[in-house]
Amino acid sequence: MKVAHLVPTLHPNGPEIGLTDLAGAAPDAGLELVVVAIAATSDTTHVSALRRLGVPVVELGLARWDPRTVARTAAQLRAHGVQLLHTHLPPADVVGAAAALRNRIPAVSTLHRIENLPADRGDRLKRTARIVARQRFMARTIAISQVQLEWYRGLSGTGRNLVVVPDGVADPGLPDPALRRARRAALDVADHEVLVVSSAPMRRGEGHELLLDALEALPDALPLAVALAGDGPLRPWLESRVDAIPDLAGRVRFVHRHQDPAGLLAAADIVVHTARSGAAPTALLRAMAAGVPIVATRVGGVPEIVTPPTGVLVPLSAPALVDALVGLTEDTARRERMAAAARARFLAEYDAAGWARRLRHVYDEVLARTPSRA
Image (cartoon, rainbow, N blue to C red):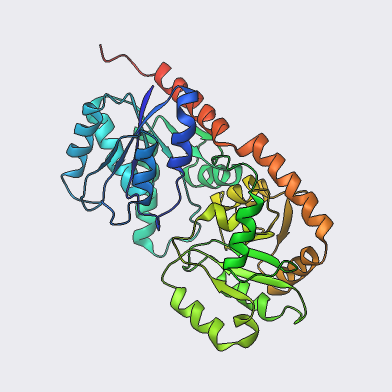
């Protein structure tokens, strides 16, 4: 089955959709992928990774609302013989619905966010328009967590054609001990220290200020170091705050945005996730795949991923985050139990191979209900 995935951009700083993970697992599910991006990107990390897996990638090089986008997308779908279109994020949903209609092929859309508080009346109208468009033009709307499904059903007033398909990530295998030693040495983390990693984008809503508040309150003698990966508009502010406070400067390392994520997880003892919302953060799946216990805020769909055997859930509170970090830092045996349970849960629930099979099942149902174009 040939399926095209339409996205606004493949820039690494955009929302993580996981198409590279899916592409690696797709052949075993009988799926042949094509990826179309509306805008081009100067950072070709994702583009190159997809092409190495044999996936055709087309970047239209257009602005998101360029009037030529629908026609050019439809032309690419025809050129690649696409049977079904899968869209991601609002600009792609709008363009994809029109392009699929032109080509008389079905389309499905994945929800990637939970947006509880539109900024103004204009945002609310846009959200309502997107809901109506999905109900009219999308054969299925895919939620990535149960809490997201309930949120969207409450907004739309119906669960018609709405399904839950949890995301997955590629299995990296267990971390290589030599890689772990090398990455920890590069970060100047001693053998006796516990390394906490946060890979959240450095932008509003990800809770970096909450994390720094908690790190300031940690006991001085606690053998804990923190690596902040990712990038974003808040990075200069975060760096200046850390530099200005000796207790933070002694604990926090800023990781270059091109640092190998797998290597960073191999070095980690704990992954911390302090976002204020989230449907089903992929960073947590990657932590579990690497066998790393998690400390995360109890928001959105996070409790569906992080269970008591695999990590610690905390409210949006610096003291609660302090207690969780201190508790896990001081209890090596507990961390090891959680690491094993996290890895086992990943293999059972969130491996990319299972994700591809779940999507294939949705696609089969949609195509079975689609009238033949013959």
